[in-house]
Image (cartoon, rainbow, N blue to C red; front, side):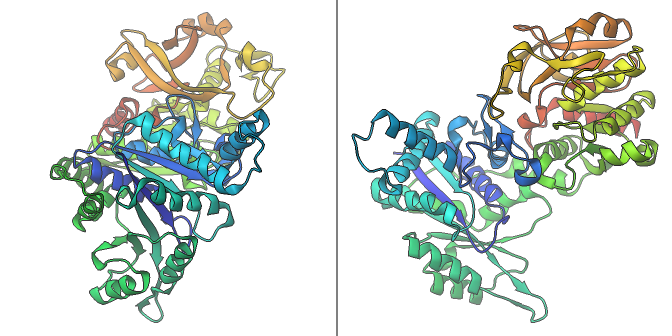
Length: 533
């Protein structure tokens, strides 16, 4: 029978439940166990696909085309688990499903209530993940903070799960904060006590506490937490801030968190081996031999989570090249106002990530022109590819008014335009070109050199495509179309001749990068930057 771990959060949000859950998955996976992770989100949106990046952060896309919470990115980066649409459930999805069943008469005339109908739908979705994944351990992260009204149905479902599955098949981990009061030079356990008390009022007694703290927890403090929270002392796990998030599995391992979990489940497994992770990931992340500075030209740069997977992919590329990647965040609107040279003259490479809407686009186009003309390595992602096409059309092909119909519907030269099937779309959520698509890589190109294979699969999230009407003109002027989705003859990768590293892709390669296996596009981008810095 599969074992289930529910991870909850208390005191405040943004404590890092996603990283903690992923790290727990990592240490259990290192014991030879098959692990999968799931996120339960309390918001009423069906998925985060229509949310503003400033509201939610990035939208993480799975191979099967689900728009999901960014924590699924942590799950896939830390573990071998492959997420699907089943690995993220929201309040919106749950209520939608229950109301749909009620309308069909599936409940045989019963009054539909939060208990048992909503909670049963939540439990069914958790069990579905276990069934689809075939995992031995399912780690379920519950979004929000204990005490939030929105999270209550998920917490109630988690409480019921132990009754349904048996005490030895379900484990509760609570992530909490131990604040440090600087003027008193004391750490305080009272917020954690109150958080656990709230959880116990709901009916959940945590088996393990993971305590975020600035200062080391003394034995005396651990004993106090143990006594007041009814948790064994050895199950009070200290989680201080670390230089790299990839240290967290080692921090947990050193406090035998894996042993505590396995003991609860009465599981016997092979001994853990995180030596390769420590040597090839953590050591290189903390003590790199080289460094390089690159410009990150975006429109949501004030929120770190808006481009989470891209930042992590750059970190992975740095690890792969034994170098620290210093990311200079540049607001594309600043480039619009003040020009590219002011912001890009001190960097060794330029990356332009994805985004939506016309704000800041002209600044991105100026940044791309600067990278092209100055022969600085350039990597464009999604909108970064479309902006590269617009820049090339205007400045190399003589199409001065070239644009995307997303930004200028009546443009004279629509080098980026909406597919015919997208013109009929009314709903915004879940209707883009989403998920994994195959791409044929043209031999003899930079893309072929980078990927070292002729057929690749990458994840997408966009509506607009390159307009094939302009293909011959672009090729004549020196643009190479090195990747094509053959089924619909859609351009996936463009690159330039006579440039050290200029490549832009319609997809999102950042979603497939891992700390111990950097995505080749990012790896070679940073390698080119190091070579030319």
